[in-house]
Structure formats: C-alpha cells, structure tokens
Image 1 (cartoon, rainbow, N blue to C red):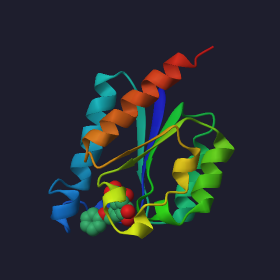
Image 2 (tube, rainbow, N blue to C red):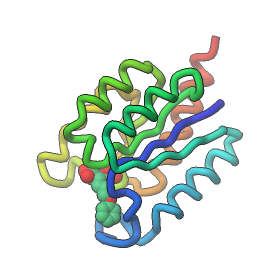
Image 3 (cartoon, rainbow, N blue to C red):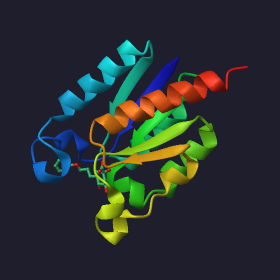
Image 4 (cartoon, helix red, strand yellow):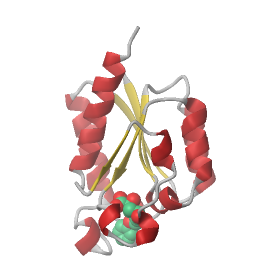
Length: 147
Ligand code: CA2
C-alpha cells in the first residue's frame, strides 16, 4: 500500500513562527514523523510540500495509478481552493484532510473547507498526531475496500 502526503503553503515554516498555534517542531520533524509512522505500518509513502496551488493539483493528479490514498493538509488553500477539491474528486482516491490546529476554533473564514467535501474524513486540532490518525484511517479504509 502506498500513500501520498501533501502539505500546502507556509507549512515549510513550521517551528519558525507562530509556535503558540503550530508548535515548536519543524517541518523536517513532521516529515520524519510521517515516514516513521508509515514505516511502522508497512506503508510506502511519498511526501510533498508546495506553496503553489497548481503544483498541489499536479501532485494530486499524479497520484492516480501510483497511490492508494492521499493525506492532505491544504493549509490556506483549504478555505479557497475549488481546484484542489476538483482534483481530489477527479482522481477519486480516498483522501483525509488534516489540520494541525482546530480550524473551527479559529477565525470564521477558516471554518469552511472545500477539499473536505471530497475527503472521507477531516482531522483537526491534534498536531502531528492528526497525521498518524489520517494514515491509520486510510490504511483501514483501503484494506476494507480491496477486491
Ligand atoms: O492548522 C492547520 O494545519 C492549517 O492548515 C494551517 C494553515 C492555515 O491557513 C489553516 O487555516 C490551518 C497555515 C499554515 C501556515 O503554517 C505556518 C507555520 C509556521 C509559521 C507560519 C505559518
């Protein structure tokens, strides 16, 4: 089983600014955590980060035929991107949306998520552990839907 894990704009700055919201661990720590969880679970993983909406769309499209599922933190594009929603719908792979912070406890403009409309679940406010939960959820989902 193989997963794509995508992180959107500014998440590469993790640990550098706004530690009160996003914590003190860095983006490299996050990717190392994701790789450790996947190794433990016998899951192949490819991690991507981009600050560009179109690149995220390209990566989602490229998952077709390569990955069994997608974990995505679209970051600010969560609240604006119909293009990411459409890409997730187009590939029709099981996807889980993750947010480090609880977007429903923040500004009202963060309460809406377009990509979540194409996801089997949205996990928010659990920090790095939210990515682990998403990976485990996709593993169970993919295994349960194998022919
Ligand atoms: O809570 C999340 O994971 C978010 O997806 C993070 C996004 C935000 O726009 C979403 O509403 C919720 C922002 C990511 C920016 O990350 C930074 C990390 C460190 C310093 C500055 C920004």
